[in-house]
Image 1 (cartoon, one colour):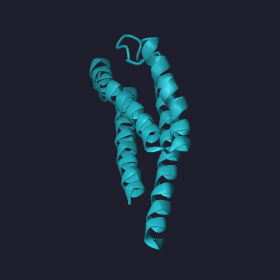
Image 2: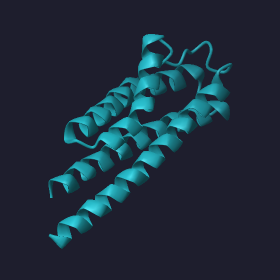
Image 3: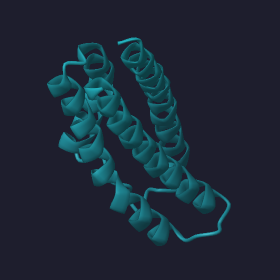
Length: 137
């Protein structure tokens, strides 16, 4: 039963990360179609970047501490990428450069979104697997 709760917590963390990324993509799309000005778009995106990084780091640590080594290893490249962005101070969106980097910012977030969807499918698979395993006992 403990594994099921671990996978449920993981599922909800991944959903929260997906919501944050979709929010960032919506802000970038609104900027691209000129529904919002660059300052508002940048400030909205920058408000959720650090919580996204911390939540993803927590998820990787959560997998590591709960003994799910494979999932922790699957989270490691994404965590490394976020840490690299943070240490190079490239994690925040610059108001003056947002139009020049709009295509890159969207592509970056779409890759993150696809990566998190794959992790979500793995999490759902293992959640169902552990629920069926608990039913057999």
